Length: 370
Image 1 (cartoon, one colour):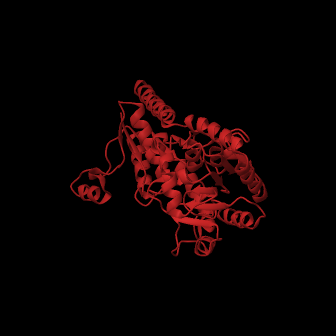
Image 2 (cartoon, helix red, strand yellow; image 1 turned 90 degrees about the vertical axis):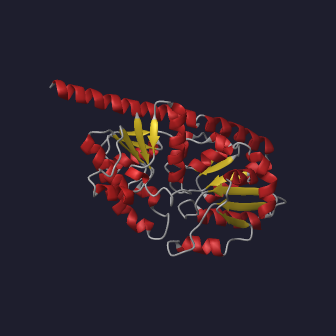
Image 3 (cartoon, one colour; image 1 turned 60 degrees about the vertical axis):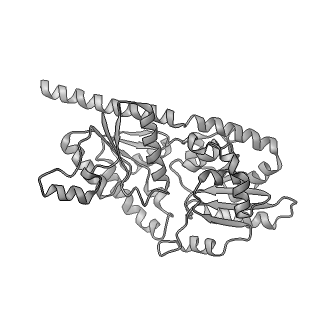
């Protein structure tokens, strides 16, 4: 079975959650079924320019495949979708993005979000099946008018990629001059990810009358060019004294090793791979109380959920003051992450592929008999 698992703009998206999700899909699939031939580019020659040149010689620009799985929604993905329909090949669209989680990502994204919702409704409706990272995301798609079957499947977490993170703790804490309790998050710096609450909470704890020192660290790239929002530019240019924006770090294991309490103050999420990675590293996690997190996690068991900044402050200080609580949350979080391992994702995803292909074959046979 030749499967196209396609991420348009793969290089620019390499450091994004979508890029991580697509890489994890491919690792999961290659580990799940030996009979799957997973290809990543639809273009003959591996490049659309080479494919276009071949078109002049009468060669179709898009390779042959038995099933297509698109992880983005741009013009290349539209070309794949139209080709799949023309060839009567099953098409999966993966809804990593919704209008809701696009808003607040960069300058102008909130204004564009309503138009994006309409476009996504059209694009996702080209598919035989839409995969969403959570039931919450699936419900958003239905509410936005996507009228094809939608199924939730976890993005999963690559447990092997985090192995040995503990050994990097001293090196990364020394590298950034961290002392005391390090409250941290990992990922691109966006206001949607809870940037303002993160920084204001750091200020509050820095000014609190306490013997405990709190340092806040955001591990991840941020845009300081024209696409950057004024909020991102403000906080990254002049952060509170106890906040460090590290920029991109070459080994994500160092980020998870250096931190003590993972804080995810995000305002909207379809799942949140970095939270699963923190759990995989056994870190106690404080997550904003969102429906998507209640779907996957249990407050007081594998995380603490907090709706407001005041509740986040209470949760962070409670974990910092109670080592037994921190250990229990971290241990349970690790068990939760293991249920999202790539072996689980690979088995589910390859089963979905097989079901779609079997259904298509039955339809063709029925049409032939008719």
